[in-house]
Length: 147
Image (cartoon, rainbow, N blue to C red):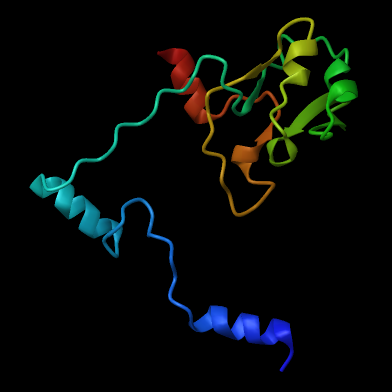
């Protein structure tokens, strides 16, 4: 048996040395955690405040945009793509490519691009609606505008 195969076999049967997250003796399911919280046996950690200079999901205001395309030129990850729809050029931002460097927001002369405090961007599909920004208001954004 080769040296690497012995090492792999040893690791497969070896007891893990790390502790379970988030606690050393974490319950097996989230339901157990919720039951313990309900009984008052454990306390949930409060959420951490988001710092004011946090670079989260891009927000794009197509009404403010002057189509100078400086954001396209400066973006190292090629997040933006131009496409033609109904005879006019539109910009689409693919957030799954974004490195959150903020160069596009910094170079925009009319502040049409901003970094939000939204950070929960996990999705099974990189083309999920949550990961594509095109300046259209989603129902959730419309509710925030009304408030």
